[in-house]
Length: 195
Image 1 (tube, rainbow, N blue to C red):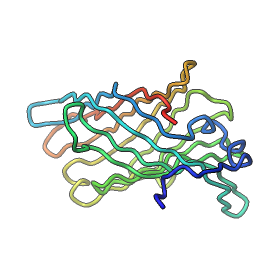
Image 2 (cartoon, one colour; image 1 turned 180 degrees about the vertical axis):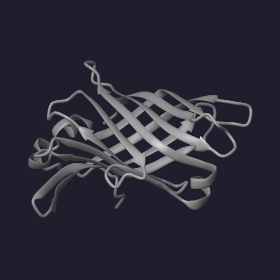
Image 3 (cartoon, rainbow, N blue to C red; image 1 turned 90 degrees about the vertical axis):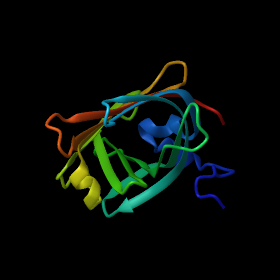
Image 4 (spheres, helix red, strand yellow; image 1 turned 135 degrees about the vertical axis):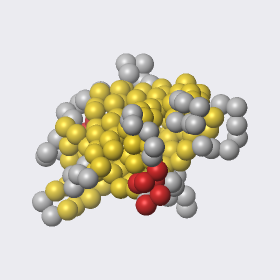
């Protein structure tokens, strides 16, 4: 069974404990994405389409802490190509007692991010962040990326719009070897639920 396949029956108890993530369960698609990435000639904007699958899980018990969340997989393709240029897997997690929203993920470039921030149970907008070197909400990279394209900070803003669509804007701040100015690698998209 595909671990990201939506279960036939979703436990109502899990759904009611997902806090601000409850309405995100399911599969989302959008083709309004813009990726701004570095190149030798300067910033390059790539329009892209994306598919995100989010499957409810929980409870996850860490002693006194109880988390609920969504395991997820994301794939993104440039609009004019069939081969994806970005993939990631991870978890969106909700700690109701501490009102903390988290997004923990890894990309196949060898970068891991654990971003988090305060959120209200009924938040339609959330801001999560992570910083390199932090033991709480931090970033880890493989040795090559740490030297050549070090990720210093990651910021994410998500919005659940009134029309039911889901949007995000993220900024990955990079220190590129040989360049004095930091580079803001940004991504944004607006997606609609397709199941």
